[in-house]
Length: 608
Image (cartoon, rainbow, N blue to C red; front, side):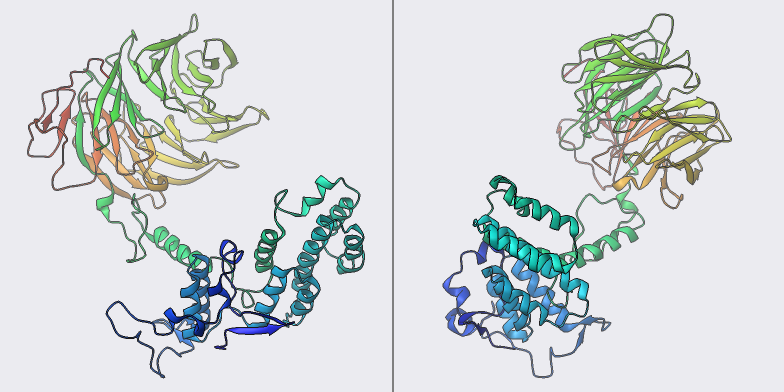
């Protein structure tokens, strides 16, 4: 129907009255007028001049549209119109209704919406029953919502007797939602401040609550009666989600575009060495990016740990060299807020450092035993450590031992992990088994492997565990409930050393691992396929870490005394220091002057 007005009970109003609450609450002269009353829309024009092109009689009237003929034209136009109104483009939405001849809502539905917004409850119930809805349960649910609103507005206005009558003679006979009916009955005898239990917020205006009522009715009524809110946006999001999930190598940092179909190639996988960090004087055994991705910490056989800062250009610069350990540093661990760092000496002590100043804040040790590993509890108020007497100890930050679990772990593997809620502690139970211990319930679950476990790491969501084994395999376990192995990764080399792997990339869709053949291996997490093998190190790669906030940055630590930062392949690598010398391979050295790439003045001493 092209008619823009309708009369009911002496009231004149627009058929397509679907403006957002903020707009419709203050009806303007434009909103109450018909399109023919609006001069600026009487002769539409286009940017190129002339009148707006209108479709020929034979065009634009097909029942189905789209290249495959799967889309119903009237539904397509209605959800576009609905989206325009939702975005605040009321005039454009009205023009679309006028030009297409397809109204967003039928005249009876517009009558119904008008009655709801005016609080004409009895008439709204009559109109609702006249919509020929086939499902009686839908009708009852919608009527219940209408009468519930009527009940609370009567109470709000002090008409207790009217509210009681509505509850007894109109709401209760529906025979549904008995719990809510009892709550409403209790309001009749409650204090005035409890009367507004039916409204979303105390003091809310009736007009605003009626808009919310329309939203609730929209969820109950069939979409053919009232187009669901944000239906077009939901359809587009579904299409983008399908494209993203179908993208085998998805690792993009940019949002998906509506202009083209999404596809990521291998160029989105970090596979080119952009930096070589040379501050360590011996084998680098461990490294880990901070939670915010702004720092990298490394641990070495040279008895030091180094904190590197990731600058705005993605270049890593030496921030502090941490000295004080008397034995090789086994590992590091970032505090939840990234303001502090733990370093653990090999069967020695744990040191806690201030990241900004580089000063040692506290030293943790236990008489007669050596500490093998370190980690933070999620609240940042306690730390956990594995000891060489096969126990796990929990410490307060001031050094007081808060708890200790005897015999929970093997002496050969130092790894452990803690869930984000602090309830689950994961540690090696024996050489080929991993213990999942719930602190609250004291429940113990085991992951049983056939070969010795050398290391493991926990996924960001806490549902998966990545386990490195002595037999040159990496297993992925789902530990959400009873542990189950879901994937196996092979190809890397391991015969003598502890080799570590990690989750990484966009939504942790990839697995990376070091290898004794001096390479870094990257697998597709879901398929188990090797997608990249990165060469460049001259010694075993002991550990890898994927930047948690930049899927295009991967770090690897090697026995060749260096750390390599891997990024996307580029023709040239821009460096922010104009005075450095460039090499032919586009790599730059940081921390040492003996490289064939860019040379920076970073000698490994403590600096800010």
